[in-house]
Length: 178
Image 1 (cartoon, rainbow, N blue to C red):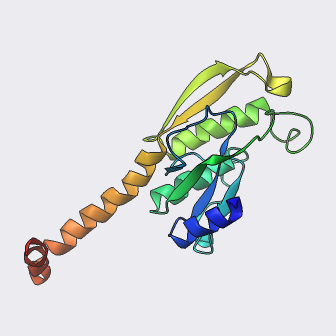
Image 2 (image 1 turned 120 degrees about the horizontal axis):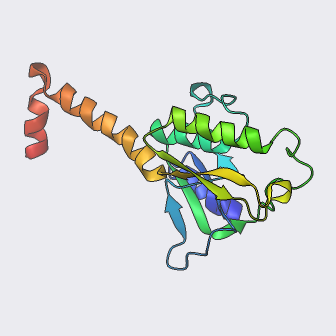
Image 3 (image 1 turned 120 degrees about the vertical axis):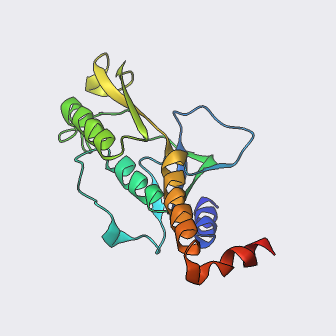
């Protein structure tokens, strides 16, 4: 049922979809969010602009990096609040625990903020339930996902207004008004 739902969202035009993380408090009044955080469990449609994305620009936090690139390039996402995933404890043994150090995590978030300064605020917090990082200070990001997508629309509106303000296309405004 979840896969069918995600397929239907991609048929509606969403480029990347997935389930909310179990660590977020449940949202009971909605079944999904649009243009929101997806981490660790992302499904991409065939419309994914693979060649327009930097897949290797960050050693970690690459899921956030790709999502921000997509949102700022006018590709929307949808996140299920009904279906959820428990990604487990951050920095537990196995997986990428060897390459993902506290230092590489923090460095990647700083780099992410440098790449998208208008949408990211960083803060320090004490890691909880984070394996070997528990009790240590790490960086956390507050990311304005919706604003990232809205930024892609601002460019489109500005170019539309500029294109339709030219003498050879001024009639488009009259067509819209009628």
